[in-house]
Image 1 (cartoon, rainbow, N blue to C red):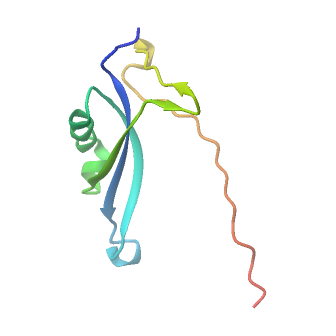
Image 2: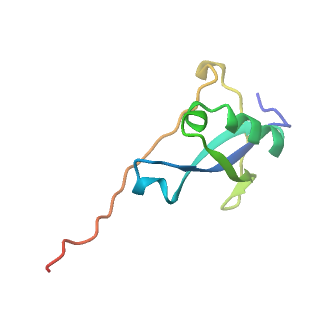
Length: 100
């Protein structure tokens, strides 16, 4: 069942990690939330466990309406029990070994 008012948002969050370069530089992470507005998306991001644990802040939000000519339509699936499901394909290009 689609909900006309729910939208997909990409949250771009920043944080400082003391384990990475002594926390001097800001790190970033992106994740998705479903909400009815930018304000609700911001509030939902702030209750995300990783967001709270890393003391993140929201740097930006994007509403994902369409990609490559395809509209995004959200459909509630009760079998997911409110959980997210992402399928990943890891790809890692390493720099060539130095000959120095």
